[in-house]
Each structure stands twice: as structure tokens, then as C-alpha cells.
Length: 428
Image (cartoon, rainbow, N blue to C red; front, side, top):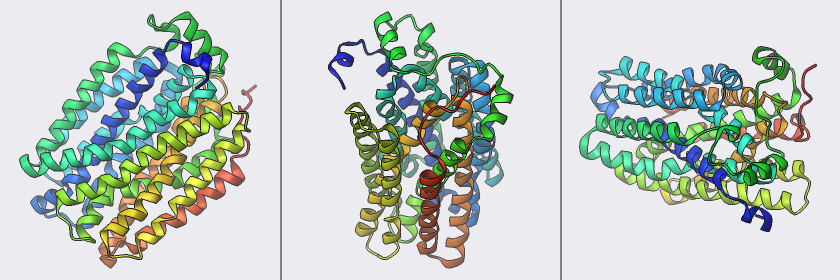
């Protein structure tokens, strides 16, 4: 951070911390099902394929609604849509605790996915409003790293509650955390132009640093969507990020089950081991995907080369997932998975910073919605494909190999299709 920015008031970092806190709760909501899965399988006599379907249920509604959520955000703004989203996901989270079987859990997870759909496009849009370009990677890494850190604290917390009090209490705890975030968001978040606690000095610093202009797209949300769907940059970004998402969601949903089934661990033991790669990913997300990128750009290096280099190198490190298939030692498996997730984590905040860097006015959340839709379709596909492979082979080797192939495809779209990271011209 430069000497000048260090003297500027820091309201923007309070907002960044708030957005990160929301993602932390959001992801604890998502991963608690993976912790509770062994108890659910025993209580309701579910197969690995059934659990794969339950893992994917959240992403069906979440993915399908991300593009509409992005358009609604670009039309009605982050403040109001973010409030309603946080409130509804706290209600949806509580409904899981009262489910009475496969169908009830499936429907409750569909509802949760719908409620959380605006979260990441809203954060991408808010970060564009609140942070200058030279701070965008660190700001983005705050909320993206929270998705990884949720596994560090959420899996052990969930395992403790589930083992000692049962799976229903695990979902009850996450419902309480979700409602607490809704209250915090309601009272703290405003866009910069409406925030009475934002000083003129800091607002000027944000605007002069290239913040995304507030306001709607001049052509309207529907026309903007059609226009952006015809842009090569949007497809390069979205398909590259979707490839990252396949591997990320495989580990998000199946890592505890992999350790229990393939490495023969207890639920509590698997929770401790599973926290290790997510802790490594959290550090990598902030240090390499955030601080390093912003410092290299501030030092005068080409912005496109810096961001795309971290994107590609991170995805290449993700290929370490191949090595996890070559060992039966849980310590070596966790070592290679830690390297893979650390590489993917370094690339993730770069991906989420790009919508606000390439979007025409009023289009950031729509690009974020397109990108998040394809990414989270991988949240539907990866758990089901993994469940089918594991159910058929009783091993995880082929499932991990599929994830590696997806990463190679993603590198192609980032390198060849995305092009320079610069604003797309506004539609006529």
C-alpha cells in the first residue's frame, strides 16, 4: 500500500471485511451438509449417489438464478438486494434442520441456493464501487479467501456440533450465524454515494483510483445481458472460472467423505485433516491472489500480464490433484491436495476481480452472474459425477483425474479466449 493510501480513512476496508464475513457464513451454510453426510446416510439409508444429489441440490437453484440475480443487482442495486438475500438465506438455512428425509433436505437446499444466488455478484459489484483498481485484488481476496477459511473453522465446528448434538443442531447453528450477518449487513452496508460515514477524502481517493461508476446500465439490464453474452472476454473469463469451480466444488463437497471412505478416518479425524488444505488455501488467496498482485501492479508491471500469470500458474498448481491419486497415505494425500487448493485459491480472487475491471457501466453484476452461473453449474455436476464414479469404482482416483482435465481446459480459456483485461466498450 502506498504512503498516500495509508493516510486515507479506511471505511472501505470495513465494507470489505463485512463482505468477507458474509461469504464466511455463506460457505459454512454450504459445507455443513458434507459434515453431516455420514449421519444422514445412516439415518435415511442413503447411497453415495443420493448424497451426491443432495450436495448438488443447492447449486441447481443457485446456478440457475445467478444470471437473473446479477441483472436484478444491476437494476436495483447492492444495498436492497443484498439485504433481502441475507434475510432469505437465514430463513432457508433454518428449514434444513426440520427436514424429515431425502426429499425435505433436497427442497430445503434448493431454497438455500436461491437465497444465496446474489451473494458473489453483489460482492464483485460492491468491491468495484468501494475500491480503486490498485486495491481491487486485495479487496476481492478478502471475500474470496473467506470461502476457503469457512472450511478451516466450519468443518471442525460442524463436526463438533454434529457428533455431540446431532446433524439437526449443525444446521440450526448455521441458521443463527446467517441471521446475525443479515443484521450486520442491514445496519452497515451502503453504496459509497449513500454512506454517511465515508469521508469526502476517501471517496475522492476511491473515484480517482478508477472505481466502477455507480448507476444502472444506460441500455437497461436485459439489453446489457444480450450484449455481454456476445463478448469473447465474458466467455473466456466465465469458462475458465468454471473449470476452476469443478475442482473447487469437488473438494468442497467430497473432501470429508473422501477422508472417511478412502483413508478410513472418523468424522472428527477427517474434519481436522480437511482443515489443513483449506487453511493453506486461505493464506494463498490473500498473499498471492491479493497482496502480491496489487503490489506488482502498483510497481508498474502490466496489469493484464500480472493477473493472467497468477491465474494460469495457480491453475497449473491445481494439477497437483493428480498426485493425490497415487498414494494411500492420508498425510501425502493432504499434502498434494493442499498444494492443489493453494494454487486454485491464488487464481480465484483474480477471477472475481475481473468483472469490475472489464464491465461497461452498469454491467459488473451481470458479468458476475454469467461467470457465477457457469462456475456453479460445476457445483451441480462435480458432486454428481464424483458420486457416480465413486459408487461405480469404490475409489476416488478417476474422480480426481477428471478434475485435472477440467483445469487444463480452463487454462486454455484464460490464455487464448480472455484476451487483455480491459473494459469492454459500452453498447451503442
